[in-house]
Amino acid sequence: MARVLAPILARLRGSTSAPSRARSHDADETNRRARAKALADAIDRAMHMGLWGQAERIARSASRIGPTSSRLTERLARLRLAQDDAEVALAIIDGCAEMTASLRMLRAACLMQLGRKQEAHADLLRWSKKSASPIDARLMLALLEWEAGDDCAATLTLMRNLKHLEDPRTLELLLLIAVAQDRRDRARFWARRLQEVSVFGIGSPYLNLLCCSLQVPPGRDAAEPTDAQVTMLAMELISAEQVIPSLVEAQRHHPSRGAATLLYRAIKHALDDLTDQARAAEALAKLALLLEEPAAAEHWARKGLERNPMSATLTMLLQHLKLAARPRKRQAHPVARSAAPDRREKAA
Image 1 (cartoon, helix red, strand yellow):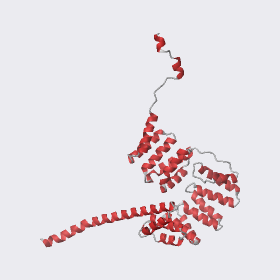
Image 2 (cartoon, rainbow, N blue to C red):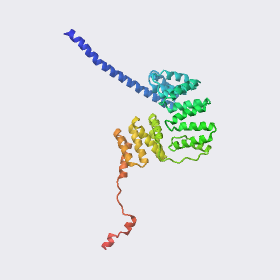
Image 3 (cartoon, helix red, strand yellow):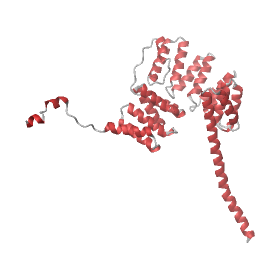
Image 4 (cartoon, rainbow, N blue to C red):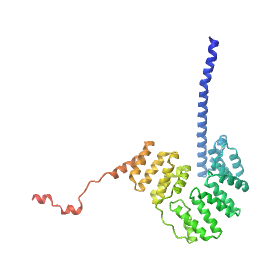
């Protein structure tokens, strides 16, 4: 009997241990990713605060898991690049198992820093021909082409960007190329297009100076952003959603209906791809209130509370909306009150 049961028990033990090993592997992978993210964020904070010694200590402890984490690899490479060690930064990037778009851009920057501009140009040229390549890749390629004296190639590269989005940085570079070529009419054309984008607060901070130098009159306020502008800002918000609360707060202190409308539509457009949807809903509620749309503000406040019932800000916002919507007690007009007979006089 023992000889019969032994193989069966062995198979059962094997079948139950396989899922256990799989779960253990998944848990290890989750922990590794969480640790890599925490280390990447810690390096970011240290660099932002200028604590280079602390950033270096974190980098040393992070070097063991860097090559398998694109996020951590990027932070380590940026640290080395900031320390003027482009060679080490390039080696870190090339050692990563996954080549993301941001790592590829950083790799091109390393090659340029090392004087290997032909290699950077060749890679950016291959990449920029793909429709999925980022706008920044074509911007960097155009700068390389312009620096090499090929204004025509730089302009064509930038024009491919405008087929996807009305990007203000692309328009600004086209404007500068036209100015450098002394093509004043063309420069004014790009300046006016840049003005159309900039009325929503996403253009160059030097736009007024550029326009004055070209004798281009100030642009008129636009009532409604275009779909292309909404899409462009939505893409930027997805990659840096931590800036959303600051952008909303800026609108509260320095309101601009065009910019608030653009931000509101862009957050709505990006909502499904944002990580913190409760905070995004809170931003939409505040913007709707700024745009004098109380029904929309209440809708987004309730949506936000569904995801974060403990939000004091959204609870207070809902209470404010309820009080504002409550009908006020009707009071007699002052003139009517003065004209009405006094009851005591009537009784007398």
